[in-house]
Structure formats: C-alpha cells, structure tokens
Image 1 (tube, helix red, strand yellow):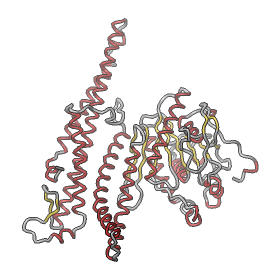
Image 2: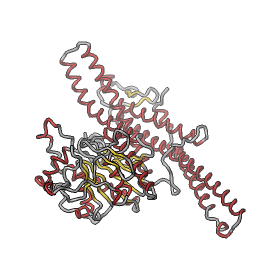
Image 3: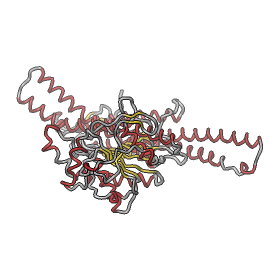
Image 4: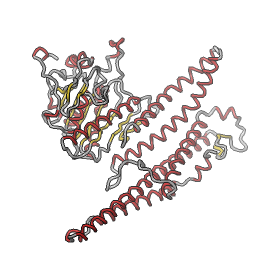
Length: 536
C-alpha cells in the first residue's frame, strides 16, 4: 500500500536533520583528528626505524579516519536531501489543503481523495469543477514516495543495514563540500521534485488524450470529440515538452562520471526552455576549466550529447596534461544558460535567418554567461579558464567577454570561437584577453563560416572572424602533436564530436590543447591566409 496524506502528516523533518547534524559532526571529528595526527610535533625530531614505523602506522590510521569521515558525510548528505524533500512535500500538502478549503473541499488523509467535508451539500460534479486539486494531490503523493525511498536509504546507511555505496556522492575534499557540490545537490533535488510534479500534471491529461484518440481510432468522427481532442492536446503539448526537457537534464547528469548541475532554471510556466549547465569534474578544485557555449538549434534535449562531448574533451585534456607533465585536473562544462535561436530550415532561409542575424538573444545570453564566468572564477581564482563558443554561441561568448572587459573584469584566460557567424569584434583587444590567447576555427564545408560570416560587416557584427583578425586553429585531418591520426571536420556540428575511430577530431584536439594550457608549439594551426583571401 502506498503512502497517504496521513503518513506525510506524521513526518518530521527535524528528526531527519538530526541524522544530518550527527553525520556532519562525525565527519568533522574524524577529519580533524586525522589532520592533528599528521602534525604531531614528535615527528619533526624523532628519527630512526621506530619513527618510520610510527609514521606508517599513523598514516594508516589517518587514512582510516578519512574514509570513516567520508562515509559519515555521505550519510549526512543523504539525510539532508531527504529532510529537504520532507519539508517540500509537507509545505506543498499544506498549501494544497488551504486551496481545497477555499473551494469548500478537503483532503481525505486515508483515501487520498479530494472530498466534500461532512455535512456539505456539494455534489461530485461540483467538486470535479474545481480544476487541478486531485492532480496536485496525486503529484504530492508521488513526490512523497520518492522522498520516502531516499529517507529509507539514508536510515539504512546510518544504522549499517546497507553498505554505503562507493558512488554515494561526488568526491569530498578535506574541507568538506565545495560551493559547486552544495549548489549541485540543491539543484538536483529541485530537479527531482520538478520532474515528479510535471509527471503528475502530464499523467491525467495523457490519459484523456489517449482515451480520446482511442475513440477516434474506433471511428468516432464527431465534432465534439475532435474539439475535446484539440483542447486536451493544447494543454498536454507544453506540459509534455517541459517534462521532456527536465528528463533530458536528468539524463545528461548520467552521461559522465563526477557530474554537477551548476545551473538549473526550469522557467516553469513561461513556455521558455529549461536552462541548465552540467560540469564534468568539479570546477572548484580543477586547475583547468573549459566552458562550452552552444549555438543555433541547441535545446535541453541536446544536453546529454553535450555532456558526452564534455567528457571526451576532459579526458583528452587530462591525457595531454599528463603527456607534458602539467599538474592538476580538468573540469569541462556544458553551459546552456540561454536559449539559442532555432537552426534555419535550408528550404526557407529567407525567413529563418532573421533571428540568427539579430544579436538580441546573444546580448541577453552574454549577460547570463558573464555572470556565470565570474562565479566560476570567484570559486577557483587560480584555475585557467577557457571559453569555447560554437556557432551563435561564439557571438554570445564574444559579447560576454566584451561585457566583462568593459567592467574591468578578466575571469577568462583563453577563448576559441568555432563555426562562428560573427563576433561583433573589430580588434582582439576588445575581448580583454592577453595577445595570442583568442583563436578562431572553421571547416571548409561549414555553411555558417563560409556564407554567413563574410556578411558580418553588413549587419553590424564586426569584421569577418576568418579574415585574419585572430589566429586560426586547424580543424582538418592530420597527425596531432601527441602522435594520433585525427579526422577532420565536415559539417557545422562536427567540431566537438569524436571521429569514426572514437578519438576527437583535430578540432577537438585543439580545443583540449587550449583548455590544458599547452604551449604554442603543441597547437595545430590552419594554413596562413592567401593574399587573395583577405576579403574573407
């Protein structure tokens, strides 16, 4: 038997918080003792075999204490997420009860139904005329079931009934959770609850739609059924789209190990896309950070693919760092914190190119991106940050850098603009980067760089990015400096994608080389522009 409203009434978030506080205290105690053992003054003067044996024993003890502390913190985090869920469910139920009371109805806490209070003369038909109450209650109960599972898992881990999984959460450093880990936990909890709510809203409408379609399939051609089907479809379509986008964000988090939901704005009820950013590797602790900004045609459904590409980029970046003995780790971020314009229909370019040749979306997106880059830099000021802008995202990236530069802020160290239609740039100095730290890249068959970019001066988007204003990286097949034979880029979407052999293309190698901070001789440059090509 499932949970009831009466079960929710008995929940107490503070009892769950006690587990969180106890686990956090255990973590702090364990790690504190481990640190103290490592600083014992005796080890600074004690010498000989006995001293070495003591140091080894202490090192083992410290490792055990650290492991115990991490386990305690994993339990604490699980309890904290469950407590957040309890509070949210109880608050939603209280609000729903208030709304039902305002309509002269109440929640039966045993049957989980919206009913008329005792002595009421309201008919069942009158109760059904109050829209959404039962669907809201069903959604709350669905959320409660998920919270109950989290709560049971936290309790089982706390009392030892189940082992603490090795993937119980992202790696935790000696100082505890970093700002990105804390923000990601909160964003993922909100995503979980939003998905449950959206699914509860979709379910009854989907059933109505399926029932009406069944009537149509059985030969019901009445105007009444057709009108009802249109009305339900009009309601269902935006809700279904929103749920699909939320599901895509959730799917993206599973496309690589060690992922963090660093941006999450569902924009519920606005008709706009969900905004999100997923980091592969913790940007708070990485020495190299790459932020990728996508372009036209990108939607939240593109995010799983973007995260897979970010994971490939990170792996190649870290291999190149190891090859050249560069210390540290990398974090690569798929940033979809704005809503790019739709890709044009090749059969209708005349009407579809308008949004692409307009910078309104890029200007708005640049503000969001500039704010995000400042946040990343503030959390890890010693990291090298590279901004990678593709297609219309290159314009958004260029404008973000210019906005930051105008404010005297220099949060980014390097930038690559690839598949660019234009950068609204007349001189590299507008970007606020050191000379030789901004690059462009193009492919011979890329319609955007070959046809749209040359028109940049005609609609106020600065000089053609590929006219020599910035050094150009190669995107074409060849052997990269690490000795790997790499495929070249064909079309506009291929720059970040792996080739048929699973290795990144030459374009991807160059992006990884920039993120890794490799020296100039490790980059693969495009051939110099011929004299006759200066107009491009």
